[in-house]
Image (tube, rainbow, N blue to C red; front, side, top):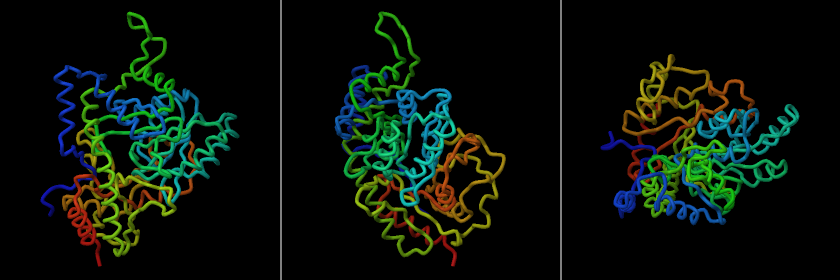
Length: 418
């Protein structure tokens, strides 16, 4: 048993303690509101990190960034938005906030991200069926892996549809050397507590120019007009990041590149240590030169034929608390199983590792298989459903040491029968 529990990606503060320095400055100057010097400084740090002459708006979450980007693209009731199915719900839920319909696009097998060929099939079909093209395209950098943005942008430009890059998991990932989130009309970042860098909770929206930045800023601060009293001519939102959280972000930016390098190192260690383990495959980026993943989480696939200790007990009891989430904020299920779930050996390995003090988690369940999206249009090739059944996330955060990775690999080996 490990001396400590090994988490997927635990927040890690800078050794110099700069997060506390900026937080203290906020308290000392009484800047404890959703504005202030830390917010301005964090946005400038992010703009420098992203390059490409982008502007950045710091927000309360990555979800709010998706929401505002959709609004800025003119998405409203009755519209359709093409979005990756293999992702977290924050990529698609904001579409429904606006009364629009998500059009789910399945994945490529090599990257696990949006399949450009299926994307174009979907666009053509939606135009044929509705006489209207989708209002936006939302690719996702799943677990930090870059999407094929060249192909996606070519299709988007062909049909004149704006791209909202959901790089919430892909902070610091690059395509041909350029930071994700800087190719499309808008880019989304997340600084949740388990992301590459954190502000406790928070996100950001990357924009192309001053005019877009100003409009997003208005929507993020209740869209108040310039009168001596509150005058609202459009509906805005209370989405700005607090000066306290932004102070954490400013400190985190000093270690961002170190965090990214660490995740890549952990990925390489998993690849080396698991390459001879039959039935276990570490998912890696294509070796074609364009991809530079941050490997936010390291993922493996498990051969369905592999037998795991305790597999006969998989899904026999209802989970009472959140797995990898915030305990106390989930609805207790009526059944231990659904019509789309990981294979028994994947669940058995998760349970085995949990007992050994290791947090492992299934990959995201495809959105087109979620009950809330039953009936939503989906353009499928079977990839995301196949991967959901056989895949698992392993710890990769900056608190995960080399010895932890070795321990995790040994536990995986111990879990395999035969």
